[in-house]
Length: 326
Image 1 (cartoon, helix red, strand yellow):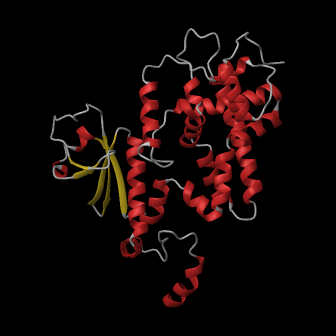
Image 2: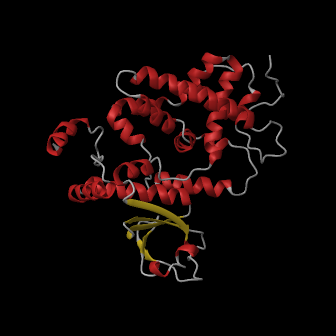
């Protein structure tokens, strides 16, 4: 009764899509469908913006995902693993992926002039560049829309309808996680910065700066930069601009002050995530390099044990190492 009908008639194609994504056949408050796809910038739209629905949908999503993780991995995953998995499944990166994958983004009503270019770049990164979960910088609008769509069912028909909407909308992702198995699922969802910290600790440092700041450091004059176009380029000279005129950020990984890799992206967040992922891949694919990193970290930290790349637990090695120390 608290949901007021604003007399808004939703677009038929949008209604059909929402029904398929939430698993519901009808809605007592169909005006909520149009509301869920209305951005705050759409000043003259008849429907309200999705902000209230997004706020509600965030809670519905988190509870449904926690319930699913608890029931699915109760015997195979500790609390830390469950928290990591939840963080990935409710992340903006994953929700944005579902938004574009389902075509919801094509129905967003807005007057934000920057949004079309953001969507185009995001789709390009996903499809043409084949970026993974953490290798893109999607607009928060995409994730907000998914949460708002989830809230439609909760506000229209109650708690269980909202939970079912999450399970239906997220089904392809949830099925993929189960198919991976516990260990592979945790590796899949682990954020690249977290993975690098586990491997490199204080030995490998990551920093980000805009390119105009980066070039002011004379030590960076001869640095080769890996670009989002998958090619190497020279660092720009002071005052020089990129040919496409876009603002770039440089992320750099160093070991003991020695540069390992520098990478450029139009987003600071994506630059950092992609750099961390590339360094983690390099360590994972080079056993000798991984072992040397492991040994150096032990010397620097003075720690008894450190996690090698790919280790899920150090319990198996503990007895042998303890005997050696004795």
